[in-house]
Length: 312
Image (cartoon, rainbow, N blue to C red; front, side, top):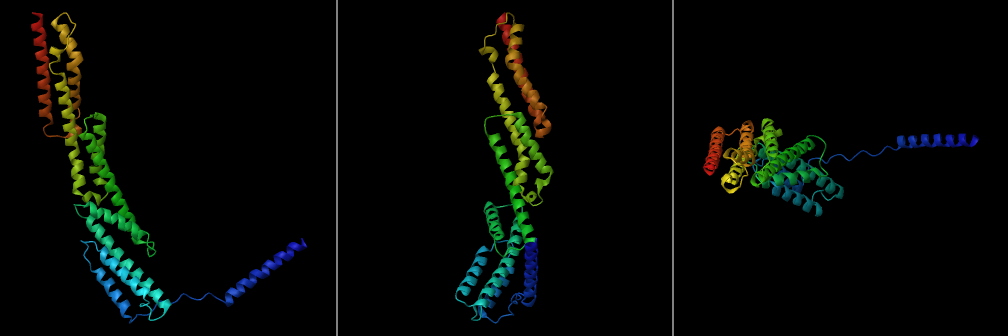
């Protein structure tokens, strides 16, 4: 017990000694920022940074930004930024580099949103925006705040654009292959309608006329696929009353067998298409339905006449 008290007393004395030492020997304050300089090399860089602010938002200026970076590094390597003092040289390099980063970042963000506010988004520009945003986010000069939020917003816009682009491409791949599935068609059209109704889920992505146009065109393309599939089925079942042997003993029995095996399945598909007018919204829809029904009813009447002639 006595030993423990001694240890505690020593610890208290040591702690008091440390705080007294800290009070008597405070850490040195950070060096003040250098005053306005007459260094011609610093002034040249500052002038170029100021000219970066005036660049148009319509054209990216990465090359101009990179050239200033190289100039700062070259002047720094030659010790030209600090009036002969290494510490000043180091400090001015950081000051100029941070200032350049800040000015360029503001300009780049304005240029990126100039693209997003437009109706035609070039793939090469989107790729550059994506790559440059990633690079700027990795910079040691990035500070938490508005730039971080704007970078996040850029990624959100690009991600939504790519999501809808992939959806459209998947829908086109389905429409352009030979396989037809009504449930899958309805799923694609439902998603396309949701995107359109929700303004493509993003106010900037909604500016893109290609995406909106492609989404609006999907119902017509899906309808054409459905109609072509139905026409193919009708052609496959045409004249089956002539090419298939039916076992009925009367023309009525043969007609019934023909209807069940060949005519009714296609007629059911015509009815199925007719019931989906609301998902296609095509102006020629009802006219096409009437044409299909007339063709297929004619096919049935021809079959009946054929079986009757066979019975005579």
